[in-house]
Image (cartoon, rainbow, N blue to C red; front, side, top):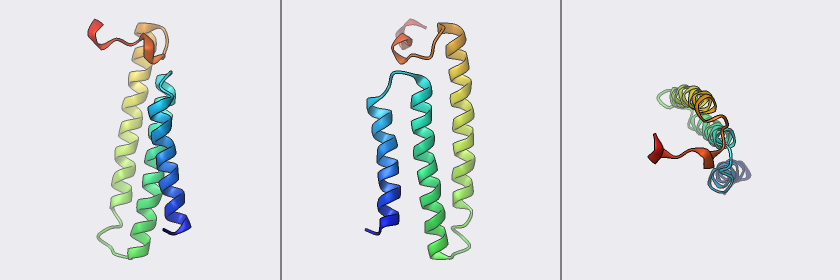
Length: 98
């Protein structure tokens, strides 16, 4: 495994462990998701560059577009949760009590 692959793999795993273990606030969960998507975007961009194929050059942009949609939906949920529940703490959210 090259150092570049190790760096992006560890960045993705660090975001995944942050998402798994530090679930106190919704904002921290969204930041961990964005870190994971950023590491995937850079890794996919470097992979498309190494292959130097025209057919793979659009895939990082597609991932970036989906990441932007995910971020906007997450921020909309964060604002709606903060307005209805008063905070963004994950323990205050109860899906059974809608």
